[in-house]
Length: 198
Ligand SMILES: Cc1cc2nc3c(=O)[nH]c(=O)nc-3n(C[C@H](O)[C@H](O)[C@H](O)COP(=O)(O)O)c2cc1C
Image (cartoon, rainbow, N blue to C red; front, side, top):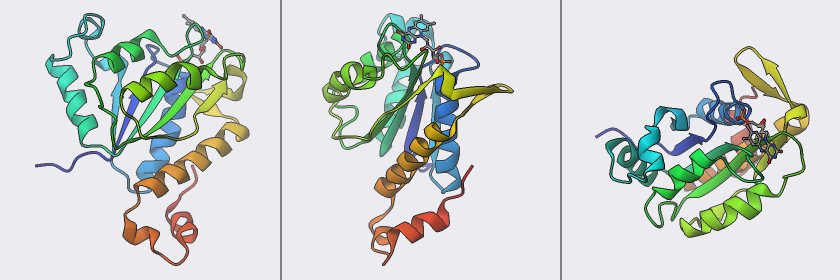
């Protein structure tokens, strides 16, 4: 049987060229360079009908359950829509089993039109993550539109957002690291040596 993915990265934007997915891709490419196995799930790859009609036992949805069950961490990226997460991402979270995130670390990422809805991650995603049994949520990363610059088919975060992403990447990598790595006399040196800045 193939090894389970350590991290599941879920992109909750319906847009092909997406700011929140660009944050997610920045995050996951750094993790992948550190050797972490990441599975990407884009909302746009899932049948809309299964999501809207809550078909939790449809093959595409059970495949998501299975991938999540074997993972240690979940990264959720969403645009802010009407001061909350996208309806599509909420529909996906709705079809997950109770306690789907038990024993997992979750990292929320969001992009928004402005900084007005900075607390959206806490007040809208917080109760959902609690309902899914999440024991540990890393500090969310919120980027306003002005902090992301269009480049080709994606967006580049400004230095402030990059610093927050890099800090979170290190923290998540530390959470995922086997105890043997953390027992290194200087775990930060160990992480820095394996960390390749992008
Ligand atoms: C339907 C809709 C609702 C939105 N609602 C908000 C909002 O309430 N607050 C906000 O700051 N931005 C809002 N925005 C702007 C998006 O959050 C912003 O453009 C975001 O970066 C899009 O992310 P994406 O490119 O990953 O889809 C909204 C955009 C759309 C299309």
